[in-house]
Image (tube, rainbow, N blue to C red; front, side, top):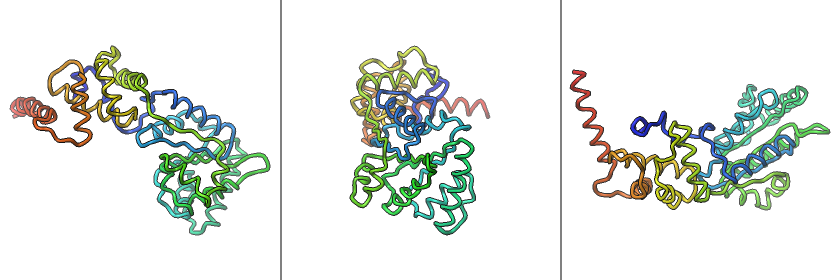
Amino acid sequence: MYETYYGLQENPFGITPDPRYLYLSKTHQEAFAHLFYGLRGRVGFIAVTGEVGAGKTTILRSLCTQLEETSYRLALIFNPRLTPIGLLQSINAEFGLSGRRRSLVALVRELNDFLLAENRAGRTPVLIIDEAQNLSAEVLEQIRLLSNLETARDKLIQIVLVGQPELADLLARPNLRQLNQRIVVRCRLDALDCAETGAYILHRLQVAGRADGALFTPTALQEVHRHARGFPRLINAICDRAMLVSYAASKGQVSPGDVRQAAREVAGVELPGRPLNACLALLARIWRPLRRSAL
């Protein structure tokens, strides 16, 4: 909507994870380092935690793009609310197997044969489970049993559990202590600090085609951090709405007031004379002459 007006090639603040826009803050760099260390060291289990909107899924997608297909085979599970059989069927299907067998024994045998073949070929199968805090204890126990698939020298499958901080609480339960003890590598994604928030915003604008860094005033960047608390998903939502607010007012730069208004709208606070209404009116004025010319 506002991309052309601000000299952008695309929306820089989309909420879908896009590895091109990955900004490696200190905490994200540490997470990447832990993940690569764990996978290359074939440690078996890795756990990644972080608050909602901290960038966990973006990190995972970026990791996947950097793992060589000749060395790794990936299976990604984004719907963990499954039964043990449903989980195994999904895992096998993600690895390109039939996944149609109806018993746990048959599914495990099918997966084990695949893992042994990949091991002989020099490839490492990696299972990534997102939103793992939603896994049941029964399913987590089944995942633990998968780590028993091994040769005398290697774990046949690397398992990455990704979830909100509740995942750490879940794994700390006494009935899951066997699984918890097997997690060798752990990392947590923290929120960005104020300087990182500003750098994150400028990075996304540059990727989208705006390289001069002057679209947000310095104070506006500080306001974004104050309202978004350093969480990338909320930063994106507020910046997108702030640019819309500024565009509706035909301004060339996003101000602190635009950010405050955007933050209130993102939070669902209804205000009289909302800038979004002004933007819709502006679009109506643009649309009417275009419609007349088409007629």
